[in-house]
Image (cartoon, rainbow, N blue to C red; front, top):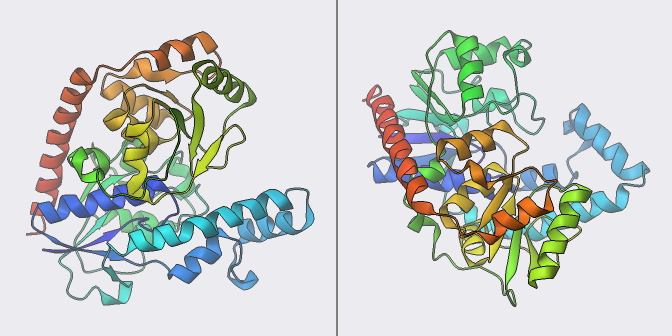
Length: 365
């Protein structure tokens, strides 16, 4: 079949890119032709992330952000973030070349639409166009399935203001959610029995993420930190640990204050950044996935239930850190993880998910 994937393949974010990359590899391995539905041009994408979008095209959140940038003490910080996105953007542009693109108007020869994965059905995320990611305004006659979709931290009540989104979700032949919260919310919206499937990054062989190059030079042993932010106490504990063990603190793309080095690397270098690290700490979902796959020693700050859920499912809940205890951090980061049991669980989860995806695609054939 020719399958059009609808997902955030073009976010300036390692996780969003890697899940799209894995989805492409998965579907192609099943024998399908894969294209991606383009939501916006690259120029529009850069403008969105660097607050250069025309005022008339901005929603209320972006207009507020523009005001904050121009008239408050945060202006320097926001401009620093803009500079970060400009540095990263060329690396992602090159990576996006892997994805054949079509517009919503070019779907006439597509056999099936696959929506997923990640938090593409989260109306609380102001950067997510939920009508687009549910195909509410296009592709009406094309069979649709959802694979590993998530509503993030949204509740069923958050969809009340957009009935066309609910109608679009109800039109899907099969819906596979990525987490238990999403399963519950989508079930409430549709009255259907929603099953859970793994994130695509867990559905392919991990060798897929190795050997792509682009890993920057990092001198000496390092602790890799991949997080959108740390509390003062978390920062203090990580810094003390790194000083004691003579590790450099390397942040993958995020410009955190305690980093000795912030590396700007293409998304397909992420796995090797983790694999080469002495140890890792993360507070993100995909940081957790890739730590499970590649890190020798790691811990996760579980700010979201989806991280705790994943670690519990694979039997790695001992990797959870509360962000408060330096002794517990030292213990977790000093112990090499035992991957055998968790890899067995991941294999079982993968087998179940792959069977569900195959069955879902079979409804289209």
